[in-house]
Image (cartoon, rainbow, N blue to C red; front, side, top):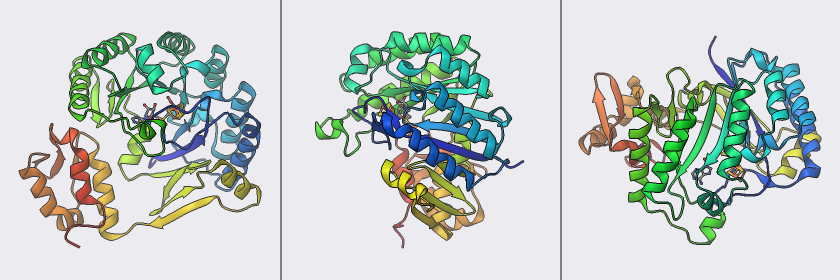
Length: 368
Ligand SMILES: C[S@@+](CC[C@H](N)C(=O)[O-])C[C@H]1O[C@@H](n2cnc3c(N)ncnc32)[C@H](O)[C@@H]1O
Ligand code: SF4
């Protein structure tokens, strides 16, 4: 069966983190039930039992109460089949809201993978980031999840936290390696417009961040993790099936505010605003904010860019070679790409300068 992904967005957070521009909102307790009803109504329009992976992300899905998690589970079962039937079903959780009761509920519903946001093992750095948990809460929640039957857990880390030294990054990474999750994502901090960090004029030392990302590669590969995508490491066999679908031009459906879909060559995004999304669905309208069909060079360029995020590289199609051959040649010459047989991939240097390469595959094209 060709893999197909189902994504469900839960846009609620306890507090907005200082770096985050994801479509999520602090508080809004009184809207959560209405949001779940809107989700159910949207899901009903796309009922289909053939999705192979499920990802419930946010926001902070673990903020939902046990009865709300059960509602979500019933909704998935009714329109897409039991959660336990998906090859991979991931639930995103933050340390402060993942209780033993919720862990038991998620397991009973059939979820087989957790993705936990740790970001840093140092409490001062967590404070700087605006996180509402500390490192000890992460450890307690992680151990409860592991004991509760989740053996496939991803943990997110951020490199380049303001005030973070290479030493403190390395110590935190070492502690995470001792925890031994099956999957680790390491993201270099991005200062996004509209966030408190942006307003405060926070800047990143790109040289230091690169040293941290190189350290992550060195330590994690030495400890048995497979570096399979720019930001992602997994013990063999634990690479994320759902996220891989995004990098391999797969088909996916996104439900909920701001959720993105890509099906039959059309990609679209739902209304990012909570009220806009809910009122659209309640009125019986599609909550689509934007939709486009990428074709020709733009489509081939996007496929290439996404595929190149994977460290294994990509076998070029004839059209990609025709449209992007000269640009690829240029990046091979400047050392950012390497070519072996029919395959092209990011070089060791290109891994840290990937955006330089990706620019060549996005419209407006320089030769246009
Ligand atoms: C969908 S987000 C949030 C998941 C979850 N709510 C949490 O906070 O742990 C997934 C991950 O993206 C990363 N992330 C979000 N914004 C970022 C930024 N501006 N720079 C770098 N990483 C970021 C964080 O590591 C975060 O855990
Ligand atoms: S990083 Fe996670 S918890 Fe923080 S605001 Fe963004 S989605 Fe919410």
